[in-house]
Length: 192
Image (cartoon, rainbow, N blue to C red; front, side, top):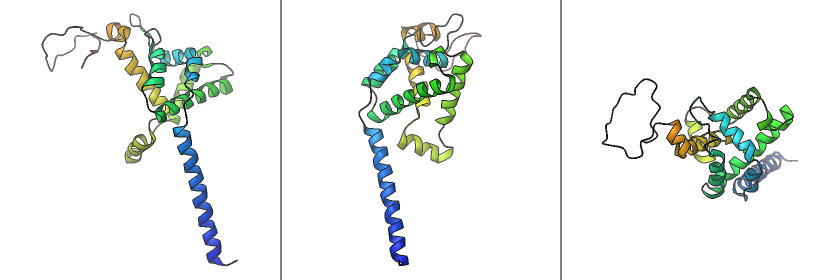
């Protein structure tokens, strides 16, 4: 075989492989999301949001504020297909990881096991450092853990229990004062 023919075949094989991988990734991002999966795992989602924002002595947790219901509705109705697929596939991966590693569902695990699972997914979804991480977030989107964290915080801060009891909320504020020192023990403000 001639060298040019061999090099041409190697390049052709590489191009076909790269094209097939890109086509598979495009399909994974744009497939129709399995919107029934989060509905079937409401208890898992409730335990996940409770791990991220647990209750305090006088502060309700994220599950008590109904954040898991908010996330299900948000994924079904408000996010794009790529983010919905990322979230649902990440939830499937978390359920599988919990079953294979601890032989039980996430919500049945101890707090230490739940924290270990969350730490695993945080490390797995950590973006690259520097400009590559910014490009990764812009073009590939956030990972499952960071989507879950963002949705949980957004849902908690906009819920009635979260804004009313978890944060300092004034329904009808007075005049605007730009810099006010917080009193000792005062909660963060719910409004910006």
